[in-house]
Length: 102
Image (cartoon, rainbow, N blue to C red; front, side):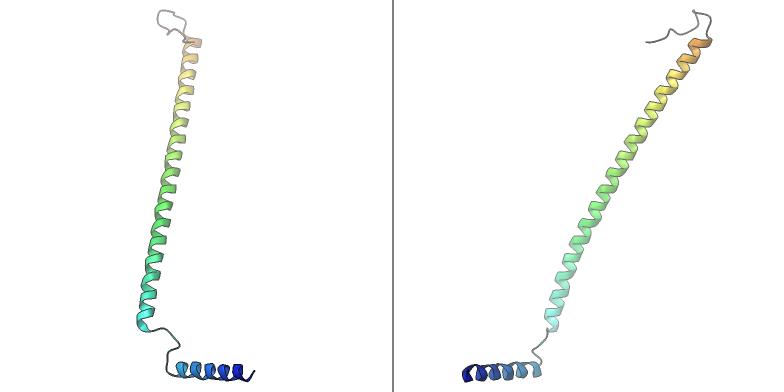
């Protein structure tokens, strides 16, 4: 039991001596290296995030464009059908009137 007390006291003295000499913290070089590593990590993460956001935005734009294009085609088809039905309803001369398409 006395052996452990002596070792504990010796350990406390060594730690106190190191703390008083200023060996308890980081050096300026260590802090600079850590800052550089963190900058590289943050840059890589933000670059990936922004590129992914642009890809998602482009995919959404393509989808919207495709939907608008399909709606325009559908509206044009409906307009053509309305024009043909109106022409056939009011046309009395078969030589001038277009023939209805099935």
